[in-house]
Every structure is written in structure tokens, then in C-alpha cells.
Amino acid sequence: KVPRGHVPMVTGCGKRVVVPVRLLRDPCVAELLDMAAQQYGYGQPGVLRIPCDAGHFRRVVDGALHRAD
Image (cartoon, rainbow, N blue to C red):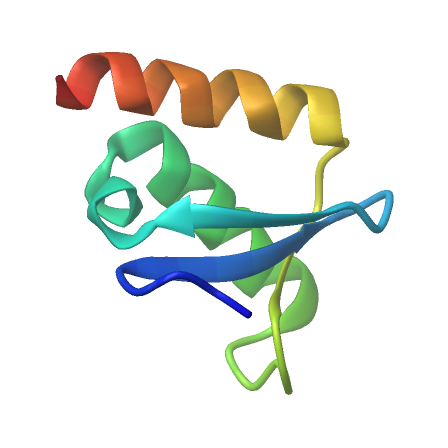
């Protein structure tokens, strides 16, 4: 179950993660979403797929969390 205020995503290697919705406006996270749209299109069924490995995704999210504080 996904906590309220979070969005589920799957990285390129298949790792499932949940991200706070407030981070979606961060420029680095938005860049990953743009990459996903280019690779998979806007009509992805189900969970959002992000075309990068889990380590890179975690670094982007950690940076966004740091900037959001």
C-alpha cells in the first residue's frame, strides 16, 4: 500500500520505490520524469517507470529531499 502523499515508481532495474508527491516539482526529479516520458510515453499503464538504475534514482531523490528542507 502506498502512503498518502506519495507516488509509486519503478526504476529501470525493477526496484519499486515510493516518492513524496512534493518532490515531483524538483528540477532533477522532473528531468527523470521527462526521460520516462521520452522513453515510455505518457500513457504508461500502472506505476510510473523511471529509466535509470536504483542508485542514481536514490541520489536524485536524496538531493531533492535535501533541497526541499
